[in-house]
Length: 259
Image (tube, rainbow, N blue to C red; front, top):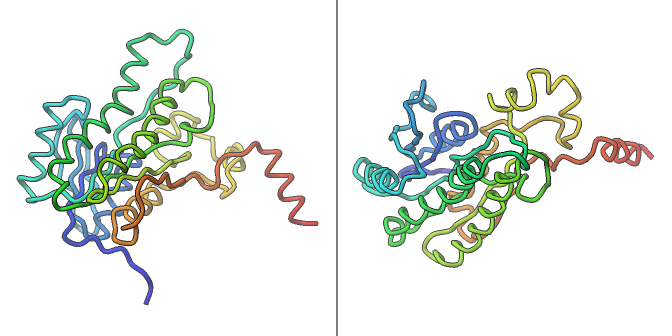
């Protein structure tokens, strides 16, 4: 018998869970049997679902302390408990570091670092007695330099540091881990890299030969929320297809493997 992830009876909150990577995470958690609550600032066009079971929506801006309090309270009111949180809400448009405004940088850090901290802080009193898990969605940008994403990359590096700190403070009742995501095939992928990105050889820079599917990020989140990861905390799990090395390094590896 194979090992399966069963989250039946678990209640999960996925911030920013209505589209992109968040929707993929929500769909996998639903498939695993969890009762999934998602939030975003505006009403979604559609809700993630699996086999006819839909995620439940709560409108909230995770940067606002009062709205986060209301979000946690509403999840508990509907479901009676909260077992897992996936801090997925985030992102940033590219911007020239030298000319971007202080307000722009502040907003990026607020969404990508301070908001996950706020959600964890407000969820902790609910989860501390029953136990559970918190998962941060980080990015390869936290460890890999790239132009036009200075504030975003710094915020994600902060998220990984925050993960390790909360893992210490919240143990042993609540586990805290992060998933470091590389390029994923979402609407933002085409907007950022261009509609012809996958046909232009872009995928050749990824050892696995393609961007991640959102549900593959979801698989990692489901694992971290499950009993299979019950001794895992303070970890950063890379879901990046092996990273994105320079194309000529991959060609050298191919030539070496043929020798």
